[in-house]
Image (cartoon, rainbow, N blue to C red; front, side):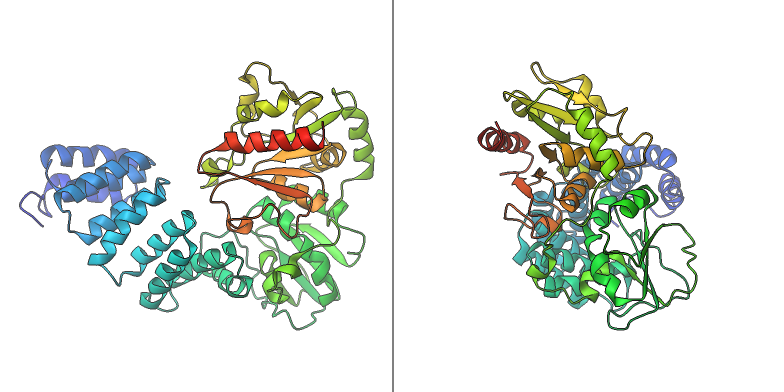
Length: 469
């Protein structure tokens, strides 16, 4: 502690420490601000303010406080690590890399620092450097700890983003050791090893709705591995999967995913996203599907064929632009609706909103000359989640979507789709290419640079004009 820092027993420092321990931002922020006023040249005080601001969700301002702390102690590796981590949380991976690389000179064997450096490098698409940083983190992390599992999981994302399934799939299993994953584990039930043939096998969905749509294709592959298959999926998807899985899955029961997972006479279980690894699908080509693995209800398809015929034609394009804003990376994947105005202005093209819940306010502030037909009050209100949406998608001439569950539903249905993909996307889209092997009818339109959705919309508009107008 330097002479400019408050002593451990200073009342202001104690007040801040107590508020931070209680995780009470309403008390922590004013306590930290008081400490900084009393000790304006204290790196410790500014670090405390950064901690309080982070606790209150003010990530951007917390970065400024971290910078101020480093300014007072520029050679302190811990302060540099904290700043780099704050920059990463504030969606500035380039800034994080610079700071964390400098910090690694002072703390060359600190696994959490090296892990965060690897994450920042991955978010910049620098996969080789990210793999190196994460390998160094793994060598220095205590074995069989949550930190070691977290490092392995981040290594899996680097491998998978680079298309290395053989290394990525087994490493991805480390997510099962991380408490932040929404993975319900049935009690007193052994994990399936992918080799045995249980009488009754339980498959448990995990993570987001889009993950379940994408990985539902493995249900029909794994059905032959057990006498009976029970698949527990998120409640909003039960009806669609019951109605939409191909008729080959005659020995499969779809049930809602609940807290208890009380299924009688089950011999083994497996997470849905573990099926490629358990089935040894480590070759990229092994993920290709010859046919769609979901289908909309035929009665609803007929209804929506009649309903959408009332919209101006001849080209009717469904559109989804906003994902769940509670998802950490949503700011990078969701697209402002107004960006798609050039498509709405194409002759003969009508945009039809398939957007539910989040992002619908954007329909009230469209630019001049942009019209979007809003189906919100008709979609899925009386039938159930995604049932009308799936049927409408099968009738529309084209679907445009950001990286949301709708993209994976479109892929599972086999409908013609243009997908807006961030410059550095989710791992499953990789860094290059216009298609995913499992989605032959989905064309990926990638940002040429971070944040540039205008170029994405322009590419889509030219494609539609060339192929559909």
